[in-house]
Length: 112
Image (cartoon, rainbow, N blue to C red):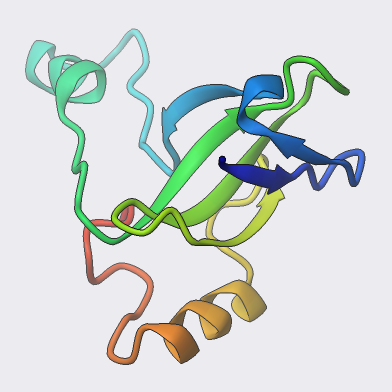
């Protein structure tokens, strides 16, 4: 079972208390975007095997959105952080690099 710690309320929530929100750090396209850019925003996702950054909502808890880093192949959770973050925290990136030598933010389809 997937268990994520909500950084907003500090609760360890199992997947039944959470709602997935898709890939994190996606550039959102607004009303002035071209059709191609808006189509890409809606449909193009990386969905890579390995480290992924995702949006989650603590639906049956505090109700707030947050971001999580986890491995899509092993379901190992590296950590969670606030949804307002532009990039993962340095300590989280260091933790991932320690467990996945050669990994670096922006190199493996992780939103950059």
